[in-house]
Length: 594
Image 1 (cartoon, rainbow, N blue to C red):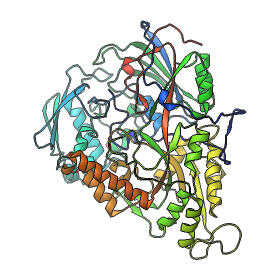
Image 2 (image 1 turned 90 degrees about the horizontal axis):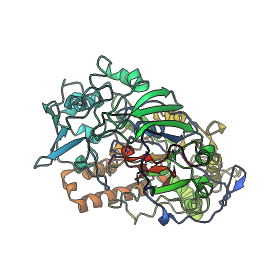
Image 3 (image 1 turned 60 degrees about the vertical axis):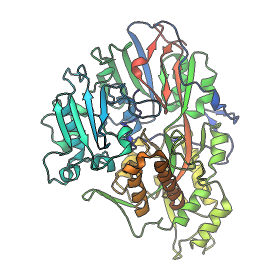
Image 4 (image 1 turned 135 degrees about the vertical axis):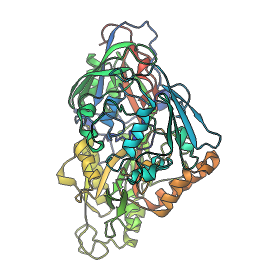
């Protein structure tokens, strides 16, 4: 199996951001393309996770894939550097992790490399298969994996993958500080064998270890701080996955061809053509047979898609959650830490809590998304059943409680204009940033704004419009002072350790919230004691309770990810919101059913 992300939380591969959909401000049904959506709740228990086609494969099939987005993919096509979901949608066809994993996202011996843990659980030794090759024909070596650690750990690296676990590699902190030329905890035994030693045993070594090499020879001569902008990443990226890139139309489409030297053998299809498809026409493209698959089927088009006879819908609970974030500081790139600004607008947690209680996420999920979105009570999705704390209640809609908290915090309407002033009696306005993404994104943003207005808060849409995906996250990364609150989402990845998004040092900690107890619990969650699952579960329960109390973000919705497949598609299996392994996917007729 291939992990959804590089297996780290922000991984996202990371970290990947997911597009929001939206709803009407009246809490009832909404209209899409002029048709009123039925608010009947979907029976999610009926969703299939595997395609049912059992016909014989067609040789040299051509597969058309729809990347659903209203924005171009950015084109940072490497796991060490990318940040957004659209780029991940491209990468998953041509690159993969060295280590495979089971259905619980725990590393096994099924991947392009095998591993062995030392008796004290501090050292992991990885053996790369002899027949593993980069797409340019070079062998994938132990030096390539070591190079990935050297790049990410370098003081010149400006990406977001240097995190708490990376810093725990023996000798990494000295290397990261520029005090050592090599990472002492990484040893190469032979061209295909490498060992990585940590300063302490860490249970996330089996779910969150970085196992994505970088092609050292292919990137030779490029300064570390220039790799992300190089042609080798942007225009001619290589991996060792089942398909390799033949051509790219930047931001619009990618044509992949079979990697006949793939370590598992020749892939089942001759080529894959990926196209960026506007969300408004995603289902129509499936209906016409223009696409064989849509990986992120827009929820508001579920009824339309379900009625089609030529497609099959698969669905799973995603490794993701949507949330409202509060900007409370900035990221100090020189020191590599988040810093809370002492005079930020959200220093009183009662204000943050009140804004959470003002939102009716249950109604949004049931009536507007037919149950395909449901209230996110915490920041660990239920797709992690071991660590999801069902006892955390989150912010259930309670307008009276929201008003009471605001009153207690000193936010009162002193001039009787319908909006509350701040505790000092000054005008209190908030700029709200939200992404575009579908034909109902704007109504949802208006719904949030109206909900806050109903409790006397003056919230305005930033620049009077929704923000395009790349621009939206660029503002968050750069801590644009115009952004006060924002609506976004995380693809959490397959490692339960949340430090990549939440730690003091994490660049992906976009709220810039810093809390000593938070850092303490995050460290305990990856301590040697946490090899005891009951201990680790208790730690993460306490952590979820802390996030619920402090409310640095308001979790809004968990989600089912729906994918639509033409009925000629065979071998598709959904896990954690993704197709599990594109190597196994094939087609059984020359052309799509229409």
